[in-house]
Amino acid sequence: MKKALRNTTIADRILFLFLVIASIAGMFYTREALSQGAEVVIEVSGKPVFTASLYTDREVPVEGLHGHAVVEIKDGKVRMKEARCNNHICMKQGWITRGTIVCLPNSIVVIAGSGMKKDLDAITG
Amino acid sequence: MNKYSLIVLTSLMLTALLSCSAQKESMYKKSMPLMDTIVSITVVCESKDQAEKAMEQAFAAIDHIGNLINFYSDTSELSAINRNAGISETKVSPETFGIIEEAIYVADTSGGSFDPTIGPIMRLWDFVDKKMPSVTEVRHALPLVNYRDIIMDRKTLTILLRKKGMMLDLGGIAKGYAADIAVLSLIKKGISSGLVSIAGDIRTFGLKPDKSPWTIGIKNPRQTGDRDEIIAKVRLIEKAISTSGDYERYFIAEGKRFHHLIDPKTGFPAATCRSVSVVTDKAVYTDAFSTAIFVLGPEQGMKLAKDLGMDVLIIDSNGTVHSTDGLKGKLSFEKSSS
Image 1: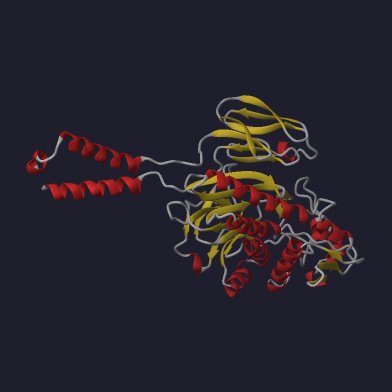
Image 2: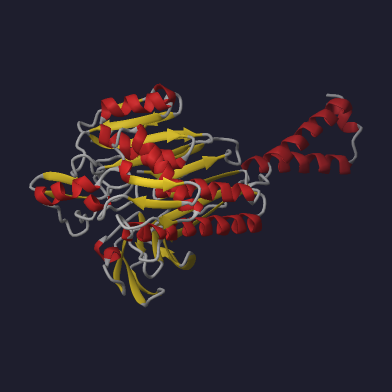
């Protein structure tokens, strides 16, 4: 080892050190295309219009396809408080901590949390 | 250590750097409300632009199917068929014809435990406002339920319901069919791995970026909270899965559970299962056969699955789990909950 080191230049040693650090760093680097977390995402016609923490109480006005709606976040839960639609199925769903509330006529989707655990790709049932 | 060993070591580290760096392929996921539910598509792709274009096309394909067979829309082909019941044949698109053909196949194979002509019975039930029909109402509607009274002409792509008052309801098969169509659309756009989920009717193809199978959670039919509780996980490679359960749409009346999985022969909910999950190649079959097997019950349902070479996980009315051997090694159970 000492012989090998004597035969290397400073540039060699810097390069070697860089490669060691970079290869170790590369093992820990991951890029996630999917987000996770205790947040609320509101989408209208498939496009996100609002994102916030599930733990910050607030009322969020949302403009859907047919009119105004209000999403309420309180005590770590979320619900559709008001919606201009025929059957109010979305409002009848009540409070959720995880999952989705859908107002189909207004094309509004409220997603609480990620909806599923990190190791699952989908849920059936 | 000599200089050559140092060079070899450096080369190995360089290789490690390249192999451990960020993967070129990523997963992209998007959800949209379509077909009266949430549709989620996940694709594995190197390009975000390609992924988004492919998903857009797939969503459009699903929306198209949804519009053709919408039971509640006056302009759908399904409604036209139902309006013309007992009167005249209706010309339909190849997609609608295809769904009905598949529905008849499942009905025939399951001895009528799945029947797409169940419309007159389903109309009597309201699971949102908790209304159930009387025995008399059901008795009057049952003669209209018979898949053998669907007359199909392949040459002209026409459908005739033989009796007036007959109604097709494709709710038990259309989502699976649409998931299969969506996968075909994604493949046409150059996507080789992905997952399409339409209200829990799921079709997978290819593998994830790390070359692992897709992992699907099966809901606990008796979960106590509003968080999704998973009773089991199944790993899928090029397979579809659907689950029919008595907890999806139901109400409790006089201490009894009335759910949406109606036995076409009685007009009332089937009572021997809590949930049935079917795994096979195509989602059109997992969707429809999960309903058929639920109605058949654990014994006959398990036999049907085995005869057809499908895998199934049945949780019966007592909470006992039954599964086919083909799921061994692919299925793992979570901590039990009643």
